[in-house]
Image 1 (cartoon, rainbow, N blue to C red):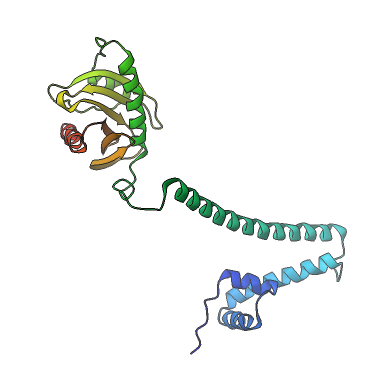
Image 2: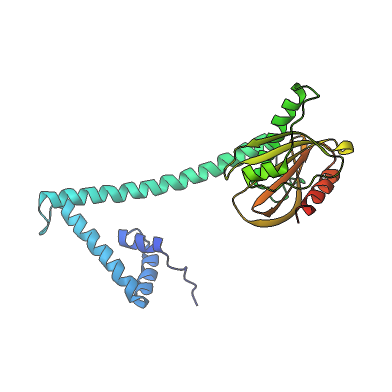
Length: 256
């Protein structure tokens, strides 16, 4: 038995336009004979195309100037639509090729690493890293004796964000509120003793979820992030990854 390629809309359009080979045209006609509803639509398209050609040629009963002008506008629209579709396909291919070339020349061949092979982290992690770097610069230039009054209840009242309970010995050295897409975010710099200086970032990401602590490295800093309900958290630092992850899990448990 001869295997016939499936008949798709592109084949039907080409049939109406008279662009099929004889063999493919026979296959389409056989398909239409088994699908009368589709055949009726194809015949209607062919009738419209025939009337259009008559209008453009000034033949038959379609002789009014406004009708011929409408036919010309329709024909131009059909041509432009096909050209646009072709340009869109070419542009899409060009973008894919250019993207692949740029990625290859900039980063080398696509090889898996600990970060690239893992799931892409939420966008709030990048916000947390930027906030950490901004606050770190401010920490370096302000007097050592300067500290911020940390009041978690006050922050909760103004931002509706619940902050985790800090372990004993941790000291808040700076607390700031930053704007974000779904409301204010909170970023705190803490002196975590032997674990060094860490940044705790909390934000509403715009969705409800419960996610365990995950880890990713961004530039020269380590980030542990998780989400409880409508609030997401990130603990940022430049220490060891396992230490930051351990601290993040302690903070997450304090929220339950």
